[in-house]
Image (tube, rainbow, N blue to C red; front, side, top):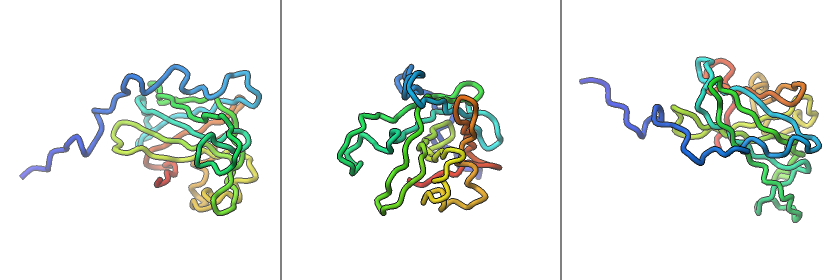
Length: 186
């Protein structure tokens, strides 16, 4: 008797393709280039072999510069009006980018403070479910006391901290293998 056949419920590849409407022209541009504090977050999405993933989708969501969300679950009364959401497909070399601003620190329900960070979702071929991670900012003193980052083993934290570049921050994502990015169960 041979091995059982793979069914569509067991894999999304080669079925995953970017549906029309999933991406939009200004999806990576959360803010205009001339906004004070605007920077580019860029990176490369790689698979377990280290090869670029040319057909992935990266989404980010984040607080504004004061650490506020325009969301009913944000307990602070002032609405920021900040959408804080972007989406970018990867190019043939697995590259993605976003123009955004650095978010402010966020309060936790337990009264702690989270360091400024951007939440990241990855969708790609061969993945049944999205994966979720965070990008923290390099040289941010609050990283040392962030409750989420502190819960990650010290030897893996570097996979969550971006690298400063002249015009922004680089954050490469590795889906598996050596140097795999830390992903969170949400």
